[in-house]
Image 1 (cartoon, rainbow, N blue to C red):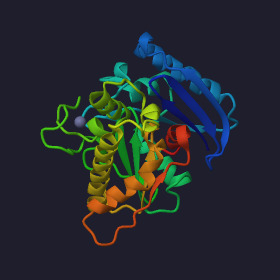
Image 2: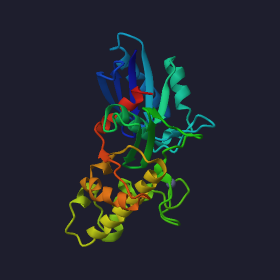
Image 3: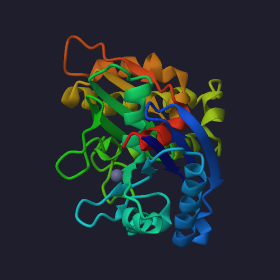
Image 4: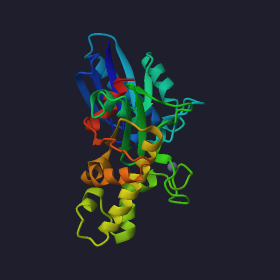
Length: 289
Ligand SMILES: [Zn+2]
């Protein structure tokens, strides 16, 4: 059976049709147009799926990768940064529109699943996949399957507490990982230190700025502690980093050392590696649901 995977992002919706071995047959991308509202997004997804299905010579499954999580109680979308999805029954609404069953999963789990099956976590039993971008999330893959946990929150690494009474988080708690090492959080910290409004790639180039050492040290400390906690509890075979922040080279040497220093063990050799699928992890992960 062929597979259609849809990656529903804040600015674009990407779709892919693959064969049963996840070899790409065709691929399309359209803008999300969030401002036109939920109904418009539903119709965009439907049209994209219809276009992809025209290229399929056999039956196909449908998987959707979306930011945010599905509430276990209601099945509704929660915690999504594509705001108009919050509180909506995306799965059933699409199912009714398409007259076909489908699977839906959050983007960090899709990322981790795709990297575990096809990317940097291939042939490993326990893969912890991390997205460090606008938000911070994580996914746990055991034997090529998503580990969701009792209430569907397993791997929600971005909202464990790094600093008691720390930064305020939109989730209502304080000190969450996301408020320290997401792209916007790192830019905000830089702006507080320097009064400069610069993007992360610009900040990384600012090694001559006297504040750079401070900024980098607290980033490495937070990165190190947040992943050391994961290793202490999960002891994964590999940690795969994704999202815009994962393009920072020093995470893979100095960052890794900072993690190792904080792990509760005399032997630490967990590989911490960059993703291999890049932006494509979402659509491939969706195909695999
Ligand atoms: Zn939080």
